[in-house]
Image (cartoon, rainbow, N blue to C red; front, side, top):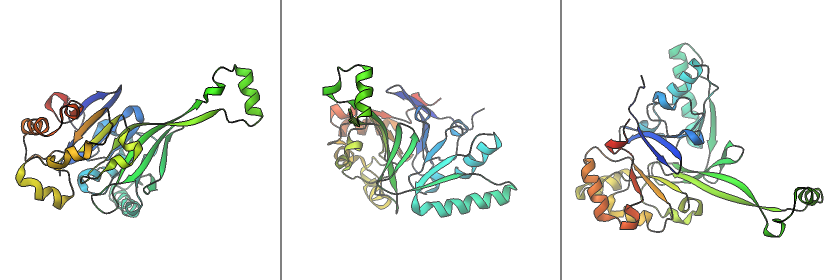
Length: 283
């Protein structure tokens, strides 16, 4: 039996599974891309995913790291990869080592240190690009990008042997093309992320909006989270086709969250929003 009841949605043919309640747990997995954004308490359903992209070290996003790595080893799965901001690598290793001593068995791990501007190769044509977000010190977000090559128009009509001959001559016949698939902001206060073209043009944007009530504005500022009052400002210059909203607070019932979203967001943006933790999505 699975350890968690997770939400499950499908967007652009990609399955998104996860759980995200502010202060409790956040884990968002996309099996088709072989990535898990943050790990929460490491639900069984995400153990087989090879790459954890950790945004920051808060307990509700990172507590399950040791279990994720240890359980993969127990199940005979290859070492898990944890991609994390540079400042977290040493403490993560210390936690893993401590759990290994408690458990009596080594916990194997592939820890990858990243900084804003770095790219991590997920698959030969799939990369996670790292960018800074404003939350805790060193927090980052990730955009998963597919990289392709598109033949230049002047060579489009050539046959195979002609193309091979040009390549032998060292002629560059194609241009690189980047297709931003999904951006995950993690926890973040409101920032104009539209300045990052790959974020603004990601087909899917996974973003928090934690607080919705008037008397929670100060809570949002103190925790560097997004309040509904500035959620529209975050989205107004973005060109995402789908917006998956996560990290809502339990202080506000979901029916009120939906009501506030509809009242606050422009209609064209509201229709793009998918509330991950809507009861209809819970499996």
